Amino acid sequence: MRRFGDWIVVGETAPTGITHALRSPTPQELVDDYWGRYIALHLDETDHPCGVLRDPSGALECVIWRENDAAVLASESPDWLLAAMRPSVNIDYDGVGRVLRNPLAAWDRLLLTGAESVLPGTYQALRSVSAPQVLWSPLDWARRRLDLSIKDKKAALRDAVDHAVQGLAREDTAIACEISGGLDSSLVATSLVSQGQTVGAWLNTYGADIESDERHYAAALADRLGVTVTSLPRREGGFTRTALRAISQGPRPGYNGIDFLHDQDAAVIWRTQQIKRVFTGKGGDTVLISSFDERVFADLYKARGAAALFAPSLPRIARRTGRSVWAIVAETLRGADAVRIRPGSNLLSPDLPVGDVHPWLAGDEFGPGKRDQIAGVVDGLCFSAPSFQTEVVDMVHPLLARPVVELCLQLTTTDLTLGRSDRRLARDAFADRLPPEIRDRRSKGDHTAFFGRMIASSLEVLRPLLLEGRLAKAGLIDRAGCEAALQLDDLIWRGRYGELLNLIIMEAWTSTWEDRLAALRQN
Image (cartoon, rainbow, N blue to C red; front, side, top):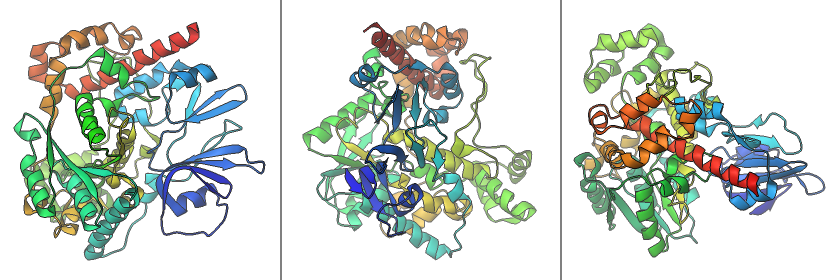
C-alpha cells in the first residue's frame, strides 16, 4: 500500500512507459501510466475515500458492500464482514441462470443483490450509486492496429512477455514456475531464465492418461534451461461436499478452485519450499491464438472481403482442420460465430432466459477469432480467483498482463498465426529460447478424461447435490435431463463433462451462499 497524490494504491504497479508527470493523476491518467495488480482509492480534499479504481487485469477482486451510509470495499467476503455490515443481500437467480447459459457472465456483475462489483478498468464513485466510468476495455485495444513488419511484431511480442515477467517478479519474494510442457508456460519459463530471475522451484504436473502426461516436453525444456523439474502426479479422487463448500466462499462461483485435489497437493509443495509467488502460462492459449481454424479465416474475410478467398492461409486451415475449403467458406458466409451464448441443453430448464453477454463482448464489429480472443481475456479473470493454492501463494499469469494483452489485441489473428499455424508469431519470436520439441509441437495437453473420472467416481455425492439442490428447486435445471446425465453409461457415451462441471460449480456456490445468508439472518 502506498500514497500517490490523492490516491491510496493497494497492490503492485509498474510503469507503462506513458508518463503524465502529475502529482495527483486523474483516474484515466492513473490507468494510462501504470499497469499491475492493484485497487486504487481516490481521496477527496479531506482525505476521505470518494471513489475506487480497479486495474484492468482484474487480478484483485473489488466488491462494494453498502449499508446505510457506510461503504466497505473488499476482495473477499468472510463471515465477519457480512456480520458486521449486515447488508441486505440475496442471490440473484436470474443472474445464476445467465451463468448457467454462459459461464463468462460470472465475471460481469455479481450474483448477489445488495452488493456491487467494480468491473476491471473502471472507476466507481463511492458516495453515489452512479454509473461507473469505463477507462479501459479490450474492445478499444482491439480496434487499434500496429503497422509493423513481421520482424518487428515478433520483437514486440518477445519484449512484451519479458516486460510482463519482469514487472511481476519481485526480488524479495521466493518464486516458482509451473512447466506444463506446453508452449505458453515455456514462454514464461524461458523469460524468467533469460532475465536471470532466481526461481526456487519448477513444477510439472502429469496425469494418468497419455494426453495429460507431458513430462517428456517438460524435461526437454528443463534440459534447455539447465534447471531441475519436480514432477507431481495428478491425484485421482472425487468431489466432496466439504471441498465444494470450501471453494464457494467467494463473491463469485468457484471456477478457479474446481481442481481442488491438485491445488491441495501443489499448496503443500509451495508451503514446504516457502514459495510465495508462482508463475504460470495461463491465458496464452487464447491471447496468442492457439486455434488455427475457420475462425482465423472468418476474421480475414471480415477484414478483406472476397480477397480473403485467395489467401494462402485458407488451404492451410483446411488441411489443419481436415475440412474442405468450400465447407470453411460456406460456414464463414453463413456468419457462424465462435463466441456464442451456450445453446439449449437438456440439462437446463427450457425456460431459462439467454440473457446478455459480458460488456467486453458487446457488439459484432469483430470476427469470431478476435471475439474468441477477447472472450479469453474475460475468462482469464477466473485464474486470479480463490483456490486452495491462492491461500498459500500468489499465482501470477504474465500472458494475461496488460503489456501482453494490449499488444496481442492490436494484432490480427492472421498476425498471431502468421497464416500458418497456431501461435506461430510466439513460436518464431521465442524460437532461439525453446527446445524444438516444444517449438514445433502441435498437440496439446488434455485433462478431459481426468475430470470425467472425477465426476464418475462422485455420482453418489453429485446426484442428491444436483437433483435435490437449489438450482432444481429454483427451476433452473431440467431434473430429468440431469438424472439421465448422472448415470455411468451416459457419462461414458456422451460425456458432457464441461456442462456438468458448470452445474456442480454453480450448485455448490448457490447452496453455500444460501446457507451463509440464512445463518446471518438468524443471528
